[in-house]
Each structure stands twice: as structure tokens, then as C-alpha cells.
Image 1 (cartoon, one colour):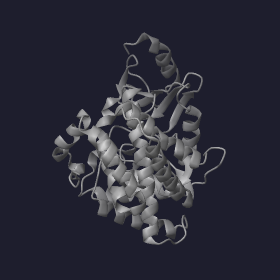
Image 2 (spheres, one colour):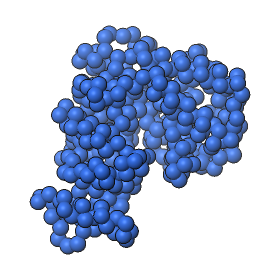
Image 3 (cartoon, one colour):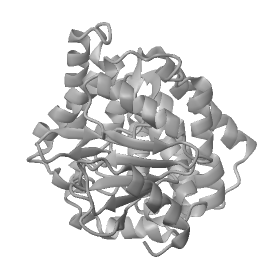
Image 4 (cartoon, one colour):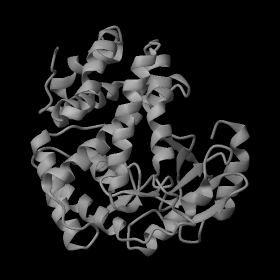
Length: 359
């Protein structure tokens, strides 16, 4: 590695390499694309390779990562094996799951088989006991704090809009309804970022799960809507609604939820999605402005479409959609990432069913 301050990291990795992963020459660490956090990832040149993680303990909860990994693994979920960890420095040495994301193979032909597998794993995750010492509740306070990122980072910081008192009152009313809907649901183990970029295609043909360190005990539809209304790829809404209802039947059969009317479950699913997507607008804007990860801006238009679609389908949520179109949409045309999304839409196979809705 070229950065000498990393030498402590390198030395630790060399000392921790297991006997089954040896070096043929000097250690080399190839940097990999990061995630939304402060973690930095590298692939070692050992045979076979390993993933070295530099996760600053001031910013990342590495103990939670290790504990959740053990919980998921004990529950039969394929997660990276942890070969070594130094909590004080934030160094980890993990099994290498490779580079093949589920997203890379998704199209309308392969979607059914791959989502069937991903949903089956999610059902297994939801059957793992949520020990309160490990999994904090995804409660009204946490949900509300996430929703407030929308005003701070997306509305104020990214678009430069100052909300009026009546604007805030409207948003608080909608947010309260979304939180109430989430709290109605049975609570299960929630990965909290279960989507096509955090599900890996492994060499043995199975699926591996990553980026699970923020897992909580929360609403049963949260991970399902994260998967089916993915912020990085979009599919026909009717197809995803049908998948959600099929999932409901499987969850009922397993006793994860009591029998519930399809319309009520879809409301849970859609309103949970709106909570997540409003949060994501704030999170992605923060990643771009605070952390310099501006690539996340290109996914905001897709998230906006999800928000407006859901708001238009429920009378209780239509005031949010009307407000968004009146207050937010006029500013979107000035944003390069917004125009670029629609210009590139036809070249994105996963978004082939998405059409721009003006007005």
C-alpha cells in the first residue's frame, strides 16, 4: 500500500493471516469500493484472498458487527466468517465473498428465481430471536429521528429550502401516521439495509449477506420493502405488490404474523417503504454533502418516484405528495443529478418499467 500510515494495519494483517491463507510474496492490499459508512475495504493477495477492513472505532460499532454476525451465522444465515478483529484499532479480517452482487444479475427474466431465494433467506432471518441485549427496538424515537434527516439534509442543505411552520406541521402529521403504521406490525429481526447490493452471489451458488451491523428489532415489512422497492433498481409496482402478498402468506404459514387482510398488509408494506425512502432522501443527501460521496445523488430520483407513487395511492398520504410537488419539485429541475437520471433511464435495464410522470 502506498499510504505509510496504513503500515500498522498491514502489519496486523500479516500477523493475523490464518495458516490456510498464506502469502506467496509481500502483502498487497487492493482497495475496494466502500459503503455508506466510514469503513474502508481491501482485498489481500493471500491465497485464497481475504477482506481486510479498516473501520474506525470512533465511527463504526465493530462489536455490534461481530455479535450480529455470530447471531446470524448461528441462525443458519451465510455471512462472512470473521478470522480476526482488533476492537481498539478497528481492524477486521473477513472471509472474501467475491464481487458478484445480486444486483448484477437481476433482470425481468431472472428476477423471480433470485428474489425467491432472497425472500427465503429473509424469512430465516426473521425467525432468529431478537435478544434485547443485542437488538435495540426500532421504535418511534428512532423512526422519527430518521425521518427528520429529510428536512435537515435533503430539503435544507441540498435544495436550500426553508420550511414554513405549516410545512413542518404537515410533515409531522404524515410522519406520525407512518410511525404508527410501523408500530402496528409484529417485530422481528431487521437487517435494516436488505437490498440487492448487500446480497452476494457466492461461488457455490448460494447467497451471502453483508452490511448487517445496524440490525435491530423492528417491523416485519421493513426488510421486505427494502428488497422489493430497492433504492438502486426498480421493477413494476404491480409485480412487487404481488411478491409482497406472496411473502405475507409464507410469513403467516411460519407463524411470523397472524392472518391479516391483503389490503392491510400492503398498507404496512407501502407506508414502511415511504418511511424508508423519506429517510433515504436525507441519508443520501448527507452522504453527498458531508462525506463527499456524491454518487448517491444519482439514485435520488428513483427514491423520489417511490415516494410520490406511494403518496398517490393512499388518500391519507396525498397531502404529502401534493406538498412535495408544490414545494420540492420546482427545485429539482435545477439539480444536475435529477436531469441526468431521466436522460440515462433507457439504458438502465432494471428501470425499464419506470416512466417519468410530469405534473
